[in-house]
Length: 159
Ligand SMILES: [Zn+2]
Image (spheres, rainbow, N blue to C red):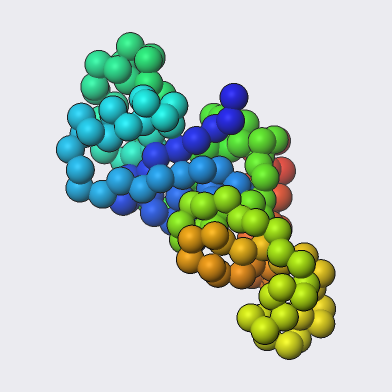
């Protein structure tokens, strides 16, 4: 089954890393625990939290709902924890989700994005994706490459 997540505000950077890897990840922020648990259950999302209260809820302790208590406050170590516990890297689909909206990106032809990306990018890149919601254009630029390298390193460390 496809892994989907629900991350609390304390692990926001981790949530973005997950989106980079192509994992559908929602944020929750200040809502009450019961509501969070209900959404996660309805949508089969794994809760990622630093809040021990959520871990004590009946649905979680009984195993009906999966939740991971994130140990570190550093995003890279948080990611390492998930890779080690959930075998994440094997299921990653990088470059498929908008980092801001969590929307599935749509492939665009070079011609379609011509007026919307810097000339250098247009000249050097061949694959473009667009977020249907915020209309941001994505391409495999240096930032994306750096992230991919980083994720590969995690995967190797996790063994
Ligand atoms: Zn977007």
